[in-house]
Image 1 (cartoon, helix red, strand yellow):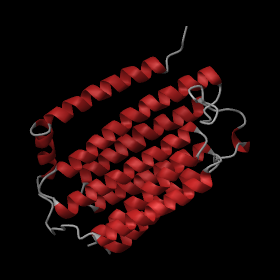
Image 2 (cartoon, rainbow over the protein chains, first blue to last red):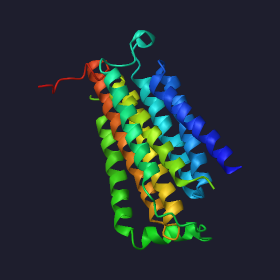
Image 3 (cartoon, rainbow over the protein chains, first blue to last red):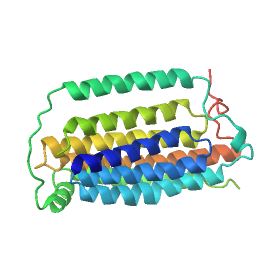
Image 4 (cartoon, each protein chain N blue to C red):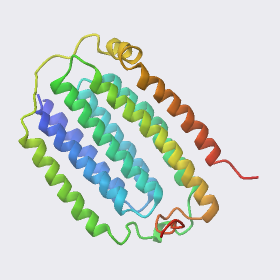
Length: 162
Length: 102
């Protein structure tokens, strides 16, 4: 049963991702992006990372996608449907991306990863919280400062000049 | 259980699709969407490795949460920049934003 679910989620995610990068209408691309994020949240659930799946939906679908849609609507020019989507080097980029995928897939399938078939600890979420304020407290505080700085910076940058 | 390599190949494919989007699209917001796809591919990799190799430590999930945090901060600042540029130059076409081109 699990391979079937994984196959469906993988197809949905990759299909949505392809639509994101190829669709002409930018707003449609943002909606396909939301579908891709939801597919990835499903993958996280399959990997027994439930907290991360919920975080993914909350932050990516809830905040970042909304921000992207706002930005699309605030930067609309009237020529939208007639402009070409890709720049002049898209053929080269497609070739490079295909080559990169072949290389990464070859590495991923050939290396003998140290797979250890273990069970997820029952108190995973409390361990996550304990790690945030224990061994990883410095990155945690730095991330908080980063968020404050980003918020202030975004407000100042996007402010109306009087 | 699904083998680890399946998740890694999925993440690699998603990363390459995002890379194509980030490098080949003209609209700046579309480039940002490609970047977000790449960051999500990285997250899939991190969580898959956490699940299959080091489940007892939560470092894999922690790393993924930090990636999400940084991606959110970067998306906010990036989109603020695009809005400011659009206000100034009436375009978010990356080929027309070339004041710093040598």
